[in-house]
Image (cartoon, rainbow over all chains, first blue to last red):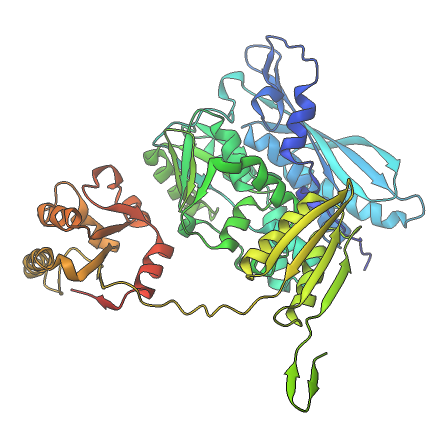
Length: 336
Length: 206
């Protein structure tokens, strides 16, 4: 079987949030009244209004491999790129490949990666229209996706209300599993669970959610659950996470206790600093909450009554959904 | 390597060095851990890494494994971390407190109407013995007793005023949707609930 070499792949390859905000802070910014969502609100994608009914959504995501199977890697990269579109409440239309590939490597491998990516794009109902490839010493793959959304129906990151409950649609711990896998210590079951999570499109969860009144939504990726939760809360609200209710990949706890930690998790932890407090929560759970997720689930803030209806429908359709906490007044994010 | 002579068992501490520069996470910590696992009390490991994050991850491991920890920055891409293996701390939690009472239901025993009367009586009896009670833990339906509208709220307030720690499970309050109606005590979690029972001289159930 063609195998990829995974060094530091997936969303743990992302530049840390502190680093990014430093650089982004220095860029001269122009704006436009048509720019509905840009990078000042830390959103997953850019949204630009075209007319009364339509706004285009634009996203970009790519990274080095975190699994050895090139086809699976392609699927994961595509699911990850598409995730941003769904988090916005948009429909994906077209996709462009971004490829970095070593000159001397077997092109079959690249073929398999792109097949995997294409499969997910097709599953999402979008079209792969082309892309750009360059030579590089390390393999990287991803996509830029264009989607469309009604301007009045954009699920922005930044309007959760105190009293909202928090719903998460995929288990946490993917980063720890791929980190363990990198050093040959992940069990087959853990890796299968992680791959299953990473290759599941957020499309299905979103098809349920968009029928209800959602206050805020984001996808959980490189900044970990707490990082993306903090982004969602901005400096306007705080939150409480009940660690007992978190969906986790079981073995991720073991890998955390054995220190198979990513550097991204530490960067995520440092960025949030004092904003997060833990009430006697075990070390492994802390680490999982900072663990960068690749192609993670949707994190949604909505009223408890709506959440009940959403969960019922999700259960009917066999889509995972877990209530993990609440939005609170104030600024602190407390994990208990 | 330990030196033994005829009239003394003299131990020399080992000093190890690991160059983890150029290694990507989680390798620096895992390689250090491998060495630590075969080390003994007093042994010291110097780990060379090339970034601050690796230093922080080593510090986390030191904290979890109770190792001595220190570090210095040598230059932009070089940090030296010192880890010292210390006496393995006996992690048996010693009982320090008095009694801890665990209340898992809003009634005492199976029969409903009778059970309500009994739990009221039990809590009243508790309120007369506050000097012997350290903590009262409420979980599952037990949290319903801590609502402001509960029929035992006065006795619970007496307990609280006399210095008894009333611990109410947050997950449970959330489940019943009654967190805003909490009338007494503090919201806690499973880890605190376990810890309190481990440290208790005696755990009582009604």
